[in-house]
Amino acid sequence: MSSVIQKETENYYEPPQTSQPKPCEAPNRVSADHDATPVDVNALPPATLAFAHSMFDAARGGNAERLLAAIDAGLPVNLTNDKGNTLLMLAAYFNHPVLVSGLLARHADPNRLNDRGQSPLAGAVFKGYEDVVRVLFQGGADPLLGKPNAAETAVMFRRQEMLEILGIQKEEVDRLVASVPVGPEAAVQAQQNAEGS
Image 1 (tube, rainbow, N blue to C red):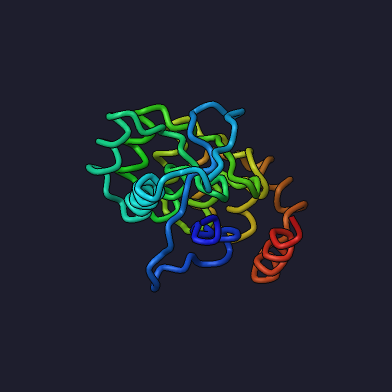
Image 2: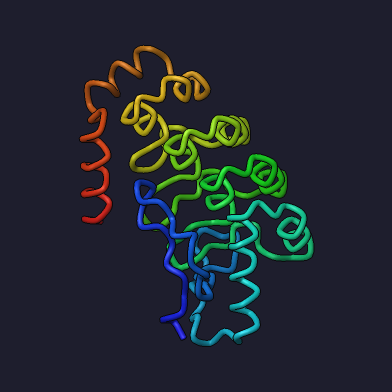
């Protein structure tokens, strides 16, 4: 059954596959606790897997009404899939600021990294989603958390407006510019680093 678990985007620099139906994806953690014991997805009933799949799809699709109602009914707000991506990560990456705000209001962890060490904030910076970046930052997301972190991502892809939203001061920008690759070659290097992890 684990072969039907949806594999999430390998890293921020590779667009998610959205043209084909996704096979069922299952959570590998079912608790808000960072040290939660992973669930053996082979032991989950098909209906549970289908429900988890629909919740991850709701996050990707921005279906705030459905997803927030499920969380209000007991779905863990920090539910993660097999790549460690939370519902918040998916909502942020697919540009759903209203859903991101609703998840944060229900105590989603804005600083929870996925299995590749990436943060929801860095993903939103990479995609250029200013509204999502504002909501995450105001919700407590740390711009210096993760690899690459949101500030590094903004420098790497020359997103000055993101640095301003994140309140990154000129001295920090200068330090980042000196240490972070910038421009098209940065994307190639980020891809190679992600594949090596």
